[in-house]
Image: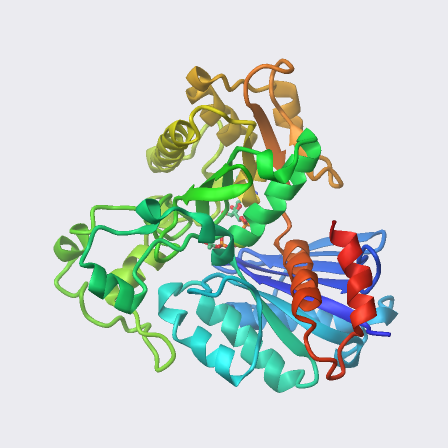
Length: 437
Ligand SMILES: Nc1ncnc2c1ncn2[C@@H]1O[C@H](COP(=O)(O)OP(=O)(O)O)[C@@H](O)[C@H]1O
Ligand SMILES: CC(=O)OP(=O)(O)O
Ligand SMILES: [Mg+2]
């Protein structure tokens, strides 16, 4: 009988890992996350069985790979976690990889797929490189464990041509894969299923505007259970601003920023080639550039410590409001709910209230008590709308990018019956398959 599945989510400011059992449904053995990698000290959150623990770390973990190694070691050395004491207890690792290019589904890592993904590294400079560093580490340090990669971009394959196409020379666009891909799709997929279930609607009849807003922030219009537009584009830089990202700007700004902007950045390596402009717009912009902090909890406060903090908050609200209006029209006003998710969406009552107040003309209204209280630990979806029945629901969804990847993986392995090379038997996969539907 197989042992455990490890799911890894390397975000731009955090690394989250979860070990699951092969049960029906899979049971979480341990959930561990390090956040604030870009704003030290980092914080560790650790949850196993009934034990919950949060601490500020003294160790300097400046890369996603360091954070991953730390988390793995922490789990393996926990004397109360006999189920995952070493790499021998792990059968598969499911990695969240942000940019999957034209991959429609998850893929198993081998020399060929890894080589292909390496070619996409430059298109998600804050993400793919870090995630693939973890994949490479797993291949060398845990060579017997098979790695499967899941892509944020897969969920957005349904975006219509006119939305995903940039109005540029189409030969060049096609040759270089220059189109809107969209990201946070693993999260949107989890949110869609969870909210549809909560609203008691079939997924394929559910229409939502979902915000996944954390260090990286995006918004997605979902019509009949399919992504029809999203704010990120060719790379996760487009759309909303983030902790260190500018979001959409006039592209000409790059040519007027500094003379150096078009040159290769000192951050470029043999692995990753980014220009100074990309480095500035991805890593030195957003609320960090405006306020000095990447922590939105210091910005979303009733009495901001400076005008700059207030401006950062107002800019974020303005950009999100613009997308909500646009997506409401794209969905023809047929909207089941507006959903807040991601670190900021789930935790900032102030941001939620401010936005909903600004979108009252769409029939959105918020219950202040429910909003201030937020969701309980075990509450995946919480309704914070005012009144009942009429108008789109205002919801919070505590997203989970790890478990959703796991579900996709099960589906993939069942569908394609990945060889039995030391893997789980087909019958067992079928058993897991029944858990999905
Ligand atoms: N109470 C809070 N209010 C506002 N923002 C918060 C709060 N708690 C955490 N955040 C913000 O959430 C963001 C992290 O979101 P998350 O989705 O977990 O990260 P990542 O984008 O790295 O995956 C950080 O910018 C953090 O400041
Ligand atoms: C795509 C993206 O921006 O991801 P994250 O929010 O995890 O940084
Ligand atoms: Mg994230």
